Length: 398
Ligand code: AMP
Image 1 (cartoon, helix red, strand yellow):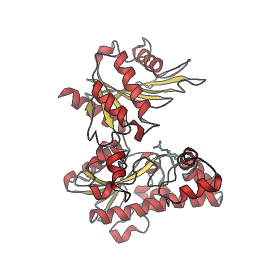
Image 2 (cartoon, protein in one colour; image 1 turned 90 degrees about the vertical axis):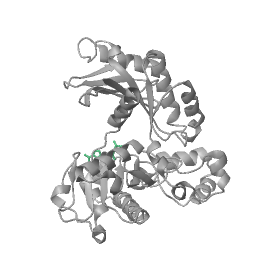
Image 3 (tube, helix red, strand yellow; image 1 turned 45 degrees about the vertical axis):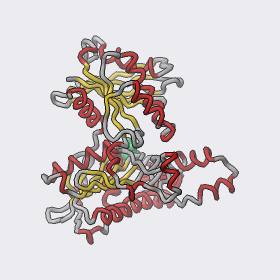
Image 4 (tube, rainbow, N blue to C red; image 1 turned 180 degrees about the vertical axis):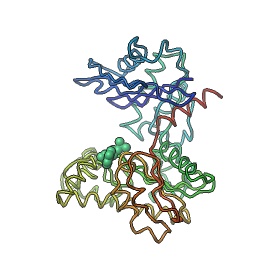
């Protein structure tokens, strides 16, 4: 069975084609700069053949048409016929309370997704656009929606209600939803497998540390808390997002700078985090380089990033009444040896001992604590596309 996975953003479409017999990736790539100058598609097939086609791509429909043509191309394609593809799985950022698992998409569900789109105005509309275009271009193929929020729908009320007037929640859906759910679900389950322990009996803290970053507390296989909230802005310091701040700063700075709510929102989402504090970059590698050269703001930005993760680990250990494993994933979690070491430093009181040699690794599954460490720490590369493909296969098979 072959499954196409689509992650449709506002100006790009990431895609992967899976052969589910062995879960191998037959082809993958990105359609970039849709509707902007210099648009192109990059494509790589399982034989390592890479191509880039520069072409005007004015909208998502053209983009998806081009990616289908690429998959079918006589020279470098991997399909003879689109009939070989069983179904299409879509990443959808916000599922609100309506979606606590992956679903087979019909017109009614598209409408429900549109109804909750105001909770994620930047992400959901392009996700829905991708779904609609695929429905139009491949009308005979089942389309499945996999939601970033779904895994966290098991959070108890005390973890998701904000201490604001209760009708904010009832009337407007203002509550904590959490994101990166497919990643937290995948790496926590994988950590249980690597530790050879039952998933349903473990307390796991998963740290998804990328340009967007979040932590989750996964108790007995269920998310009981996570650091992102109504939107992905809450929680950790991120590439360009501020994470937790005193909410009173918002009106205070709006008055000082005489700016609108939208402008303040942009500052907190796009001009803060590692970028805002360091003044260098949102990319942790650039910030690490600047810090190594003695740039004070860059040093502070990195310390702040690691310190915030450490605080969440403490909080979630308390929330779960202990912790068995701490998992690192995504760009920084998988690659930054220093970040992992700084985050775990001082957690000996929990019964955690870092194995520095084992921690000297990038992008591979690895236990990074010593044999006798009671609490384990692991690196587990995330694979959100595979989760989407697996969910899609499960839904269409049943
Ligand atoms: P992601 O959003 O998961 O793609 O992660 C992006 C972040 O991961 C950026 O801040 C990158 O600097 C960081 N990252 C990616 N590769 C590395 C690496 N080899 N070493 C350190 N950080 C990395």
